[in-house]
Length: 344
Image (cartoon, rainbow, N blue to C red; front, side, top):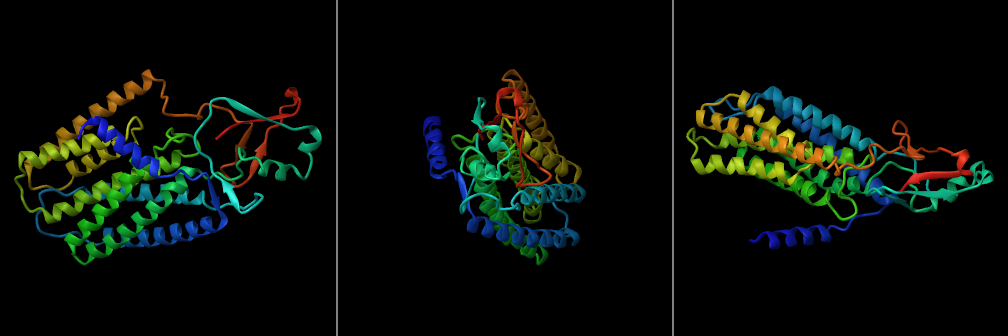
């Protein structure tokens, strides 16, 4: 497949994933229930599976259990913070809530007079403006949430299969989980008009990419039990390195997934192994991934980190992150009562 054909295929897949710009109260309620319930089952299942001792027979490679547990805890805490953004007071007019997406460098202005600023109708006036959002809920989070729910289900099922030593079934479930996360990272997080990391979607990027990194680590953990060959072929080692490299490059310039993959390699290097070839290959792959991350960092610096938007901007209309759902106006008296904000 040529590079042009590959690019066209990616563009078609992204186009088919229509970006939601609003969410209904009913869909939000369903999302809350599905997300919290599946995440709770996932946490319980993983905690039980990680608590049990692993298979005793020697394995060609096995990630360090402490690394796996630490990564799981980090991912769980990030998910808790992420899910917290789904809960806020429904304080908008109507049955749909606008979602934040994208970032406009140019500020736009909503002109109001002193009387309107003190009027009880202010919330209604702002609630009808599609550019004003009263909840810190991004389109990226709504897009990725169904895939996060599916991933939770796959991982909960993996915990059951792993605990009962159904390792082949476990690998199938982990493959489905990884495919789900990869689709979210490479397709849903990079759509037209919302392909930059902004204050509204950066938590979603972090959660989905760390979940992908954890999925890769679980794949190696499970496959180490199935694969009893202590002498890997050259093709196996090269293919493994190419996969790590492609995921690092493909998820760039954001280094989050690349750093997670580097962590996975560190876990494999520090874990128990009966294969020196695999041990050395993990070292070399980690070096290649590190070089790739350094090159991406240099390129990002030369482009002034153009993939980040809005982190150095001051908003006149902003969200209180301690109280999701509350909105604050910063009246600029010198500008004749104009309330300025940036379009999201």
